[in-house]
Image (tube, rainbow, N blue to C red; front, side, top):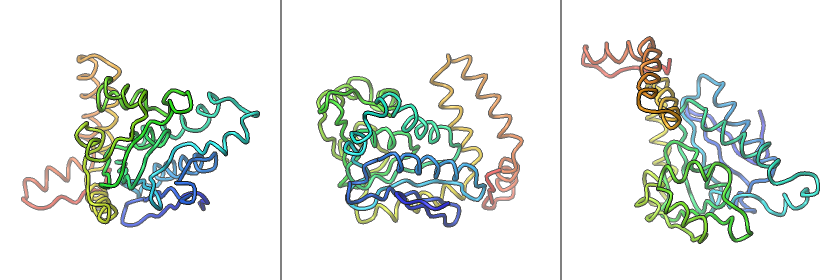
Length: 261
């Protein structure tokens, strides 16, 4: 499938999605929302793809919603419908993808792009990156999954502070708060993200996906329910090729050759 607002490349089991409207700081219009959603769907269907990286082209990860693009069609739809038919589909697609997603945050992530960054599983930020919930500057609340995802990562007090102040949070502060996993020199971001992705793609990616499923489910249940769901999912993992290969490799004192199945 060809795309116009993103770049999509697959190499050695890793799909890289690059938001590609650098002249607009990779702001999302309807086409880019749809194409990014389609790219994640494509990654989910392709068995050869075992890890996904999402990043931005140029000096921004993404400045969020392209307000001029939305304003042009505001008479055709409401903000709520725009969210339901656009960002909600994208966030759900990412959260339900049972393959590791690495967010290589190369610059500013603002507005809706914060929600997209938070929907990744591992966030590696350039030391020049930053995060900003700009919604309050135009009299709106955070959206695109931010209200669900951000308090779970950094706590409600800090999440609310980010929402109402619209302060720009630099990479080092994002790391201290637990918003990102790593901060690396900007010039090394692509290389380091690729190394992480290659390692994950060579790993037991079925187990990685099942882990994501179990952890997401755990938010919605009590401890007994989480334990039971964990046992059910572990049974699936225990019947996999990768489990058999991992045990055999351990006993034979050799490196395991995982297939993600």
